Amino acid sequence: DIQLTQSPSFLSASVGDRVTITCRASQGISSSLAWFQQKPGKAPELLISAASALHSGVPSRFSGSGSGTEFTLTISSLQPEDFATYYCQQPKSYPLTFGQGTRLAIK
Amino acid sequence: EVQLVASGGGLVQPGGSLRLSCAASGFTFSDHYMDWVRQAPGKGLEWVGRSRNKANSYTTEYDASVKGRFTISRDESKNSVYLQMNSLQTEDTAVYYCVRVDTRYYFDYWGQGTLVTVSS
Image 1 (cartoon, rainbow over the protein chains, first blue to last red):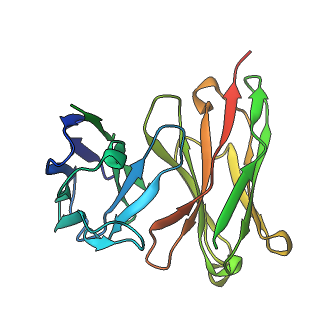
Image 2: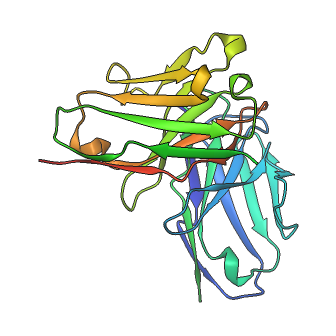
């Protein structure tokens, strides 16, 4: 199984900050990685696919990069609505797996 | 507009069975893979299984934790996908989401989720 490890697991930041979340895969997955945002009580929403492709309707302050085993999600200037939990996920091989999540909280 | 509406959750005793439904609309149902993903209370996301599209004969894949106990099926006439869950265990307690898979195998639309509680 491909394990995805996110860091940090918890992040505290302020509105306007630039934040980066990292996802490391236990084996190479080329650019096959997605990022999701989940708010309390809601279903996750796709932010980024194929490591760096912004999903329709997602603000441009979100960006993704990486390939192989190391990936990052960057939010360039945090907005109040960005405080949520973020997950990475690989669709490349079964079983499909998610990272453990990164909770982004207001400082 | 793509819509996925999940239903069928509830309280069931250990060892019991439950069938979840997911009604899809706003897209050509038979063209897409459909997955189930679950989330235990306060925990992360866990993939449960997949139904491939019609072109791939609606074949299925499952996570090892549910293989042999859970079955995914579809009814094309109702644009619905189902998750039959047997031999339920307390660790199956979770919100279950049905998810549409896009043509590049990414989870692009999620239903609202339905809560399954396994408890005596």
